[in-house]
Image 1 (cartoon, rainbow, N blue to C red):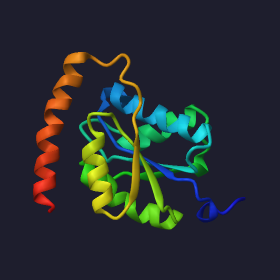
Image 2 (image 1 turned 180 degrees about the horizontal axis):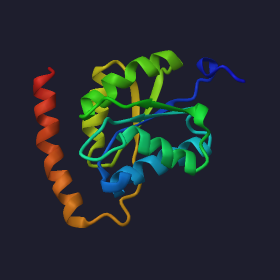
Image 3 (image 1 turned 135 degrees about the vertical axis):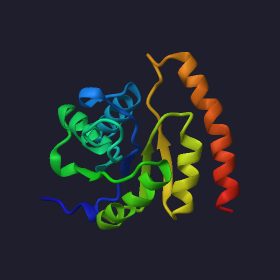
Length: 164
């Protein structure tokens, strides 16, 4: 088997989102997981770190991401779980030991477009070389997307001020 620490391709870090009752992924979680699987299947990334702890409904967000990726054809050995986090900041901070173990110099954060600027800021502040890969929002409810954009502006600004 090839040593992944010698592979210079980036590692995808999939940020968590809600798990609904019965362990069903929210549309946001499904979009992100399947986009990461597509990146792996196309050879753009060498591994996937699924992030997210236990929310209101089991299992953890990371476990649901991993299951979706496996169902899409990503082998178990290419998927790593960070299953303790509850925030974007924790997603990335708690993924750091996994990324270090993989020797990952470059990271592709998989999240939605409205969330990407803050996720990129957090990743860079952690010393990562990051870019974001955002799945299309097709099928997403416009009101929900608009609410998320309006929420992320102040969240980005607050995080930028807090961590200066």
